[in-house]
Length: 312
Image (cartoon, rainbow, N blue to C red; front, side):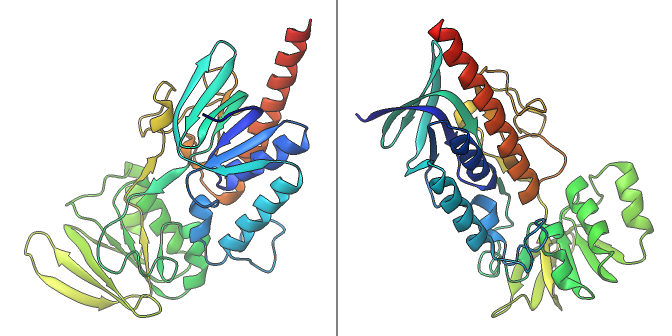
């Protein structure tokens, strides 16, 4: 079994993990990034990244991630494609068992991200990035003045619907239940808006289009009636699933996200969390990058202090 020793191991190669890799390697830490799939995470779903400060004109999420990875490698970060099976802390070191061997580290960053819950209906996957989106802040501006459908009834769906109503006069909020689940104050904003129409007891059962979203099929759960209507975009907010199976021992909030302090530290010394897997109020590429930079900075201080104490 392969065994390698590192100062800093990052699990997850999304925006948070890649930023941490750059900052960690640049500060002199022997840094390794492990991810079972292609680097990028949720950023790969962004067709045009236009709201990242300093990136103008926009770039694709794919190009952005490729540049981030190259930059981290230039500073000395190493990458492997492997599935992490377990993370343990034995004495003062972390041991990561992976599909390609065992790795040890003084510090570990969990940047495994979160995945959007999907509707699972025909057309959703095929038209993702072409009218189907899971981020209003990212993609809403591309649909100014268009007919936008929003799916969901919780805080996120209602807040995003309200945001989208600032870009167009026609937002249709589709919710499968007979009342919204969002906080009362948020619901009131939705119900008072002249630009938002709420369809209760309804579900989108199909999203149609060739190269882009052109229409949606909506089923009324009470009457079983089905209707097809024109649409330019479908924004889906039916929840997120944080990827925390590797670190069940860490504290989580009510929604399953990892709890850290402002330094990205978890309750386990030397272990950090950053990006979409972390409990926070705003999830964007720029906030994931900020998390990663802070985590790497703290990891550097932790590792340097640990080495200094062990040399004495």
